[in-house]
Length: 188
Image (cartoon, rainbow, N blue to C red; front, side, top):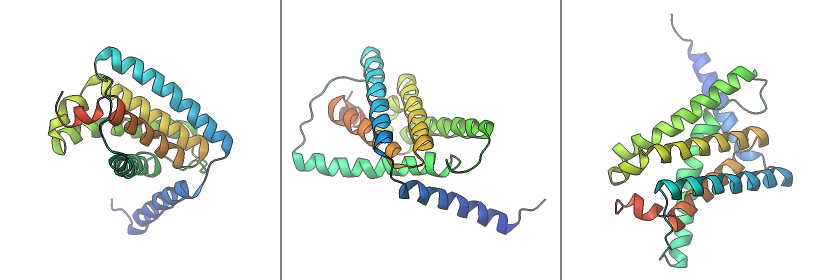
């Protein structure tokens, strides 16, 4: 059984088109309000769980304003845009497609599972100093919840921007206010 090269190329083209479409759609103001509400709920839940589990700790950033701008831009690109492009834009069916509900649920699960798994892999390969946090069950649960939230935002808006900005704000706040910088440097 051989795969037709045209079938493979069509599948790649379809995923590329879905990714581009996700960045070309700008959500309505109502969807931005939904995104903000979801972010506030996620923030409350993750802060509550993270502080009680000892995963998060309040820490004031000692960065200069310029360092914060550079950090913010870097985090917007990676992890926010890179990971949302892969785990939402490329893996999830296009919200404008006529994908049956069971397939949507399946791909939501696959996307979320892979999003969770990439963190311990990242800790082993790229950030050994952060291996403990990236394989912490509480961290992975919160990453899974983040993946579910960003998947839902992408699905209801047909835009990757709410998911990207949601992901970016969560990571930026973690790094600048809740011990993420210290944790990622391996100092905890």
